[in-house]
View 1 (cartoon, one colour):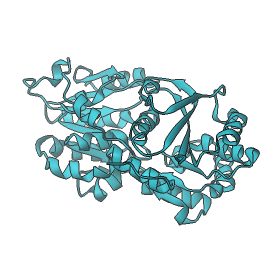
View 2 (view 1 turned 180 degrees about the vertical axis):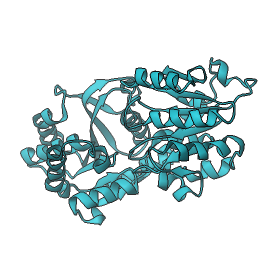
View 3 (view 1 turned 135 degrees about the horizontal axis):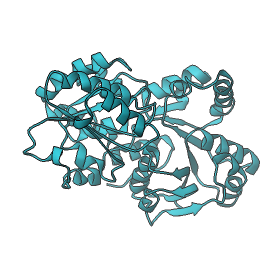
Length: 372
């Protein structure tokens, strides 16, 4: 009997959260009674090597989603997979156009991992409208759209007027056994040793406007004026020098460290006193999810989308307005002294475990579940 085949169309272009989530997902999907083909538009970054060997990885010549259409169409005609899942907006458009060219019956589904209206808020009106027109034209042709949070789903509904039944929320496959084990690894940083005696606030992410570490620095300066504390921000990005300059201007440079991208951020995070998500927008914030899985006290902005769902509207941990340094500082001060019940944090993210998420993908795509 022929096994069902799932094809995943995705671009691996760096060290981002999308690549890590898809690698996590594929590691679980190979345990299901299906064949798995991974169509790679790009094959860069550390997560390519994590793709499971018992999946068939098919590198495409195209280096951009919208130039992959003919290759994907040929694949659909030749292989006729049971389902195809396209990751991110441009891959969704490419897959739907490829199906039209191939004239096959393969159901095309998509995964969207960001709150589109928030991500495009600072773009030109013409660019926003082009993006929205493409969504309105093509997304209703999808078999299903998988949204990583209810906020992302609601945003798509507002933009496209798709039937709500066509959009399914499946949580990210963020939490893995490997993550929990990696968190136990030693970290060679003097501030994170057990005898340091000074609490460490931590942020993790690309040093970009989206993550708004500038507001975190301002909030930390306010905290520092009342008590001893330190701040570590993991990640690389174009705003590194601007953030270092801001730290000097706030007279907190001696208490702030930006050690760059870390291959194992979880070992660092597990030793933090408080984890902070200061973002202006997300889809479903993986770093916040990971911190909760590690039982670390958290404070987050109430950005679109994800934190409000993760933190049960602020009942589990504080939510503050985006860009409000004073509110963030006021939330941080008690968080440094009052450690919440670790079990509450851990239980709140059970749906984000890898196998639970993979089972949700399989059900949504109409494929058989993972065999226990």
